[in-house]
Length: 187
Image (cartoon, rainbow, N blue to C red; front, top):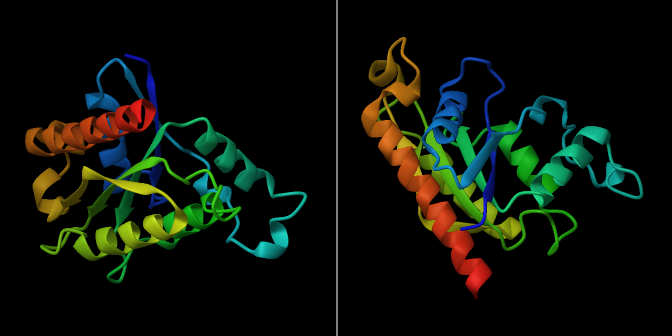
């Protein structure tokens, strides 16, 4: 099987964020034929502005687009901020959706993980991210959505990858992405 390259976009800029830990869990649990890369440059990407998206594009936005173009699939991990996905992640999706119809997200498989310390488990962020990704041209994969709730109590001081149930769930999300990528290639 050919290597599958998954670009993980983390919707929180905080170094110790649970969203980052969930993306790092995907790196840890992925099989050898899957390379998950956690993108590190989202803090530098300016808010999307069509005036900036012309013949020249800000370097950070161009780097994001290049990383996305080199990927076979995406893993989006978002916290739930005020009942929706984070602005950081929404901004990345906006940049990757352009040019409309042929942006770096267009037609590629996307998995989405929403998380929250609440019992709501990030389900509203997941719903909104799913809607936005679909409009942007990405294909949210069946079995590629996950919400993780009550994260403070669930993980405590431990890293998310040390929580067996969560690690298994993240592994299933990665598997769904690989299966979706294989279906696209064979179609």
